Structure formats: structure tokens, C-alpha cells
Image 1 (spheres, helix red, strand yellow):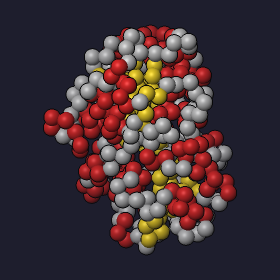
Image 2: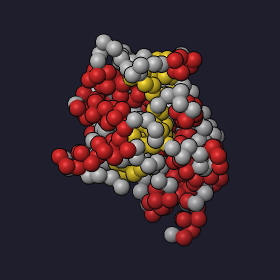
Image 3: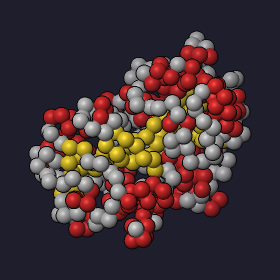
Image 4: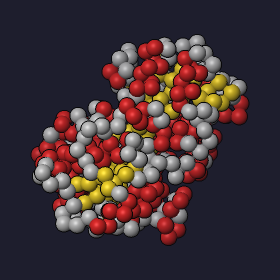
Length: 356
């Protein structure tokens, strides 16, 4: 175990190399299939945010074809339906991703930002790109849209069962510097698998990797994506690929040592498989500043929870979102006092406990 802990201690450094990736960058060919097509939200031009007045507020969301933008659109949709459908006050701004979202929020051009849990952690704790004076100390957590689970797909021709069986294999890990490569490397390091000993590493785009999996050129492909993933479903149903569990002592240490990782179970019904699969992932979260009024945060939460099934219907990636997990998963920065008050009230009338 000590050897595993030494390996895992390098994970934060490895993750910092990929921290500048946009929030939806790892979705690749799933982006279009999971976009918020047709949902009533307003996209602002970059220069328009500072001019938003009245009761309007803005969520910096990420690329318009990415998951973060879709999640912000879902939140704004339910908020505007509850508040006043004729006069939308929750607005969505398209950006390049988590890094820009945090910068806009910190500089008060917007009040809310959609960010991955690793970026949230680095920004608040002053690590990676946010070291020293760049730390966002007034960053506060609000909501979790869910976790992007790391999928380990094994070829039907491969005898591999776990990550440790892939050390001499042919594996799709994606380009250096990509979110896919960074997260895959973290899981492999934690499982004591040396990438340097692999026979071949595929660095092409995800469709190329999955094609290699289906035609027998690769033994496995490791990638984070939405749940359910159209790409994973095709590989599982049409190519006979298998989902491998990501469970070991090293993975447990990885999660314990890096609070931005979340354990997650891919339910059997996600891909009509025979059993659930354990894995880990990063959460897509909503954050704000400490000075944003607590009433606004409470209103956002109440709008989502007033009809949680309606909120989940806004996007396929919300399908497996759990009500309690939405107030916990990936929220590594301190809770905004609006979230704290909402939890205190909920604890009195439901089974949702106040979180530390």
C-alpha cells in the first residue's frame, strides 16, 4: 500500500497538466448527441455580460455544443419557468470552458460558473494554475450536475479483466494533454500500470480509438464521458465490448487523496448490462462567489427541486442524477450559505441530511 500511495501522490501533478481543458472537451463525439437542442435559454455575446441589468443573472457555461452549456441551460430553463417564462432572468453565456468560467465569475462579469470538480478544487485551494495570489478564496459550491464516469471498455477479443491486465496491451488513451489522457493516466498510475510497458498507445480521437477496439486493433479504450454514453453503448452492443470495473486499493487511495474524484457505480440499466460496474469520475458542478445573495442560490435550488423529474428531463446526462448527490458530489469548495440554508431546511422535512 505504501508503494501505491507514493504513486498516487503524483496524480495531482499529472492532473494539473490537463487542468486547462474546457469542461466539455473530453466528450468528443458525444457532444452533439447530448446537446441541449431546442431548450429555451439565452446565449450572450462575450461583451454583453457586463451590461446585464435588473434582476438578470448569468451562468458562464462552456462551449455551446458542450455538456456544461447544456447543464446551465437546464438550470436556467427550470428557474425561468418557475420565476417568469415571459421574462427570462437566468441567462447562459457560452465560453471556452472551466478556466474562462472561473475567471468571469471571479471578476464579477457573471455570478455563476459551471466547472469540473478538479478545477473547482485547484481554484479554491490555490494549486496548479491557481497557485499563490491566483487562488479564488471566495469560491463557493452550489450544485452538482452529476459525475462523468471513467469508462474502461475491453475488446471482446481481449482476455483482460482489470486495468492491471493491460500493462503490455494496446490501449486507447487519447492525445497527450487531453482530459482523457490525464484521467486515464491517473487511474493507471493508481493501479500500478506502467504506460511505458504497453505495446501500443492510441492517441487519436475517440472515434478512432473505438473503431480500433471494435476491429481488434486495440485491447481497451479508457475515457471519461456522460452517462449514458452513446459511444460506449455502440461499442458494447454492436462490437461486443465489455465494461471493466475500476476498483482496487490503489483506486481507493486515489479518491481519498484527491477529493475532486468521486466514486460512482455505472448502473446495469445504463447499458442494459447484466451487472453494475464500479468506477470513478469528475463531477460537473455549479459554483459562485461568497458575496452572491443567498436568496438567489436558494431560488436556483428550489426551482430544480420543485419538480426534480422535470429538471432531469432537460438533458439525457441528468437521467441518473440523484437528489442527494446533486447537493454533494464534487462540491469540494466550501458551501455557499444559500446551499447551507437550503440543506438545513431540507433536513427538517426530508431524508436529505445537512452536509459538513
